[in-house]
Length: 432
Image 1 (cartoon, rainbow, N blue to C red):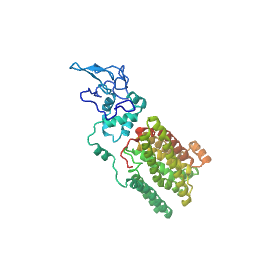
Image 2: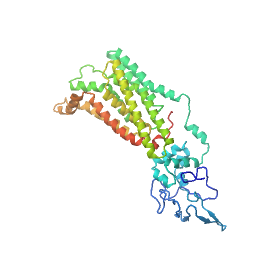
Image 3: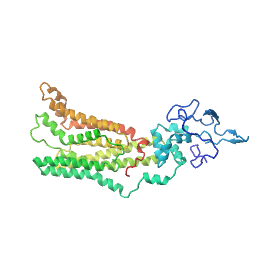
Image 4: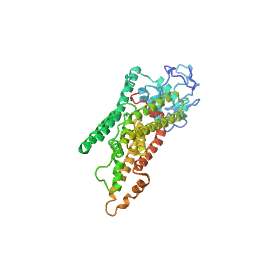
């Protein structure tokens, strides 16, 4: 039975006695890759519709032509006769087909290997999704239900579990801020050190499960730069102002409101990431082309990002009012946006660009502090001129605001290109 795409439906299996095309050993069989001369299907060396091609040293009839058997009788070669391009493609991507739990994973894997809708059309399919559906239906599966259940656990209360974990950093941050407000002197320093470790532990718990968890390991350098950026949000503006004014003399003020807002924002970040990923996967089931999918997912990405930024600004205003401190909308807001985009990209397997963006932002902030204090050396006063001019014009919060906003803007452009691909949304086993 023929489907509306012009190829046999998945239910029509290859008849016994037909020659099978082994996908291995074909010169230039990689997709995408070099084509054999005279072939219409790229990377497989297989003949197109109505063509007779030389394959493995013998001529193969095109679809619809008749051949003569060993007994002298003539038989018709079916559409999926000796030259079955989909079967060769399945052999080439056998591991992908065997481990996939649904056709969407095959579509994502094909796209990751460079197969486009135009390539799928040469396999007589209108798009990659249609091609993946036939490959999924035709692949031989033993214990399919068991494999599906093993890869897609449905544990009751999983969503509630990671939601509670996402609230832990905010709760610990609120406790640490309360302790800092009630202590002075040496006890205050001990509370700050213990609180930093506690919040870091809570953040680690929140990132181990749920939409912000990642099976791709985060490097130690990335973790170090992230901690530095948060520490600068707490101490950097006060230390920079003190250095420009000839200090520091004694203790300088801690910016607890922005850090508390960032710790409370872990829960909204997790829910925004969950909203984006779940809606994007739903679009996979309704989209009929890679370009259509990308066009439909990009507004989802921008909407989830905008929702998080608005929520973060609300938390900054609330924390600033409760603690009677400047909310630092620009600096803390830009840092929160940078951290969210970096985590979203990392969880989908794109960890290189976030690592570079975090390292660049942390390096510029460290350089700003270094030049301010290095300018006190004889003959080095010129080193502080750029930072001094920037602070005189916009205040000390301009340094993290500009640096983190630039990094967030670059990551947003990168995310709009990478997170709108179907291959970015293949299931990785994270909690729903």
